[in-house]
Length: 161
Image (cartoon, rainbow, N blue to C red; front, side, top):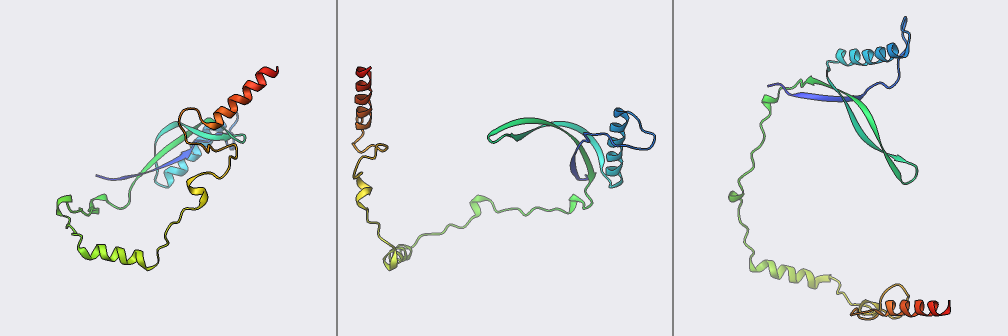
């Protein structure tokens, strides 16, 4: 059974001038004919034409979907696939089991004692030193201090109006 390789190229969007060719349709047909003949000379066989979506940028942050016309070609693979023999991996039950010995634990302890840094929490690691207005400094249960402060501020703004 022969294998195939595929090539996808964009369909022409503009006609191609040629001797004795007049009109937009004839020029477009000539461009398509030239492309297909060039591909056939290289051994590619035409399969089909596809219209596929392509998401492209539009402006700084937007995107639009453009539809692209593509031509699909194929040709037989020069190397036969019959020569390909995949390597079979061993079944999961056949893998050897490694037992952890007592020496493994002592090695890990020695590695840790030789120079690993010990984590010492700083003053800001357990609690915030001051309120910066963004992060909550009180324990979170019920209404937080930030929400109370905001509610008091809004109550004051409502009574002033």
